[in-house]
Image 1 (cartoon, one colour):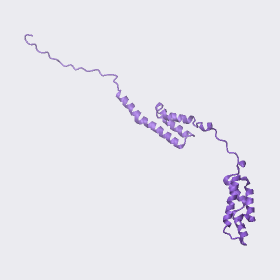
Image 2: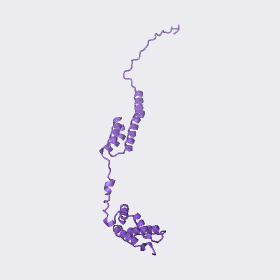
Image 3: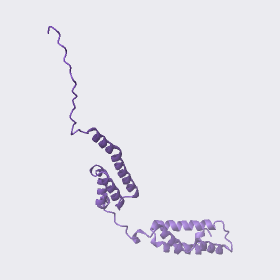
Image 4: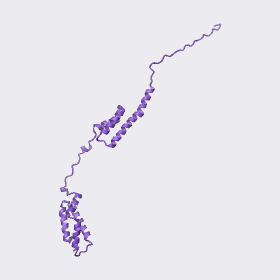
Length: 197
């Protein structure tokens, strides 16, 4: 025998493999049959063609497995041919991607954390922190950052603005009812008159 493909069991095996692989794309089907044929060639290359050759061919083909199993594994790996595949899902519309997910809660949280520090001291930042944690859109990291911004805003009020207001109010103390000045009368003695005056 000139090649292992001339053996009737090998020819039948490869023909069955090609038939079962009909669902694969043509290029991949040809590659798969060539790979299995090469594997058979390698497995039988060192086997002497004597009386036990037929048994060894059948043993090798049995170890390879049924052609149906080989094709099923290939279909699991690559999927069926394009004609038999389910169509891919439609692409996401650009409007859905660019639309903001922020709602009223997130906008109010930002306003309370920034403008609220000056408009409603202490109440604004606290409300901003509560709104940030109530948000279903913001991640945990964004909520922690919002909390830090609120605490910094309140710290700014305590450390900078409050002392300035206290200093300003203490330096502008006005006297509304001044005490009347008291005069002390000092007796003045008249100078003696000199003769000739």
